[in-house]
Length: 517
Ligand SMILES: C[S@@+](CC[C@H](N)C(=O)[O-])C[C@H]1O[C@@H](n2cnc3c(N)ncnc32)[C@H](O)[C@@H]1O
Image (cartoon, rainbow, N blue to C red; front, side, top):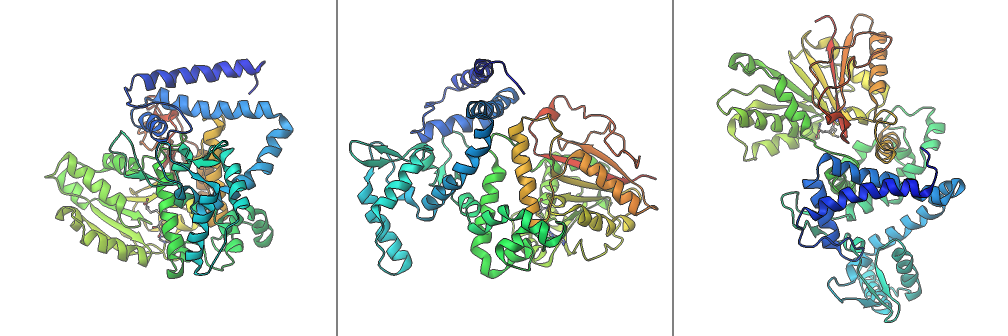
């Protein structure tokens, strides 16, 4: 990308700002001030955009994120672009960690005109920490002042220089659990606390920094128990086993909260996380005739607590409540299926849904699948947790035992082709890829990665030919043909869903089928 002048890029930014301003004006928001000091009005604009914004408006927001980052880098210069993050981000993270660990924003009262002096904050911190540590601790006012002054340079907390008091800004209020203003029904609340707790945990920070060390130590990053996570957490166990340990319950709970925040995506402007798309679309593959439907079998591999199967069953019942449901089998590790079965038994779901779902213990790495006559094998958010070698293992444990007409549907995060999305979107997805590699030896894949992986599977299994069809937006493109060419395994035609493929979808579906059928 290049521009002749700063103004040229500035004008592109201006054009996108106008789109957003026009949208906000048309929304009749009670308060729509864009101010670093007003949490409710600023967040209301963002929420409104997420809920009511058209594709054009949502894209304008992403484009602004992208172009303003470009402008900042251009202003910094080539060396500054490299040095700025290395120099400032560690200390920005450090200050965020201090604010979060000591709950400093929560000490300052919220509300118009409310504030605390540095010495009041220091005193409150001394009392709080003494109580937490169960010993007398005297907090240093100089420390508190310097941390808050640093935080205020990135809009967290504001200082009244005359009165020497500290009051809230909008970002400092994001540390609280905040009800979502003006627009039901998105959820209950936003809170960044769990996300900070996980992202700023020294062991997770170290996991990010030790990917190179892991490569040197283990030679390659293939096994989930030979990763940067193992080095940083000093454990021989893989991430999932480590998190399942009763001693790590608190960390595990913070991780679940963090994932919920990230998956809700509404604050990120770059990813559309409609998790139910797979469920919605699998229904289109289920036969409508009663006799065929009740014998139709869907196996959800790594199906956790059965949420995807429940969503599909509910979607089918919404369309026609008198029709029989297909058979659902959720396969997962023991602890998951026990929890899933208990949750299903005690749920308020309709009896017909409850009786359509069964749970089975199955380890897709260690166990060969027995012939189970399934019509569809689903994998939602499973494959990106595994290296290419282990995905081949998983497929090897299923494909030889599946019937010739069965489909494997893999729904996962998809990394876009270069230049297809703004860099800022690709950056977030590539960040997730690095996280998957460092924590689990996993991988976020592009369409081409999937093609290569299926070619590898077919080469290693000369008697089995898997066909491959890819749809980047989680809606099945029935006009795609299965690709069975071992040299270049790509979706044959581009997706024809009107414009949907251009959306910032986080997910895609890879459909696999034995080629001979
Ligand atoms: C990210 S979760 C996805 C859960 C579910 N598919 C969904 O979309 O909500 C990954 C799932 O894979 C399961 N899993 C991990 N290793 C497994 C293995 N070796 N065999 C079977 N399931 C496994 C985990 O227990 C977990 O339920």
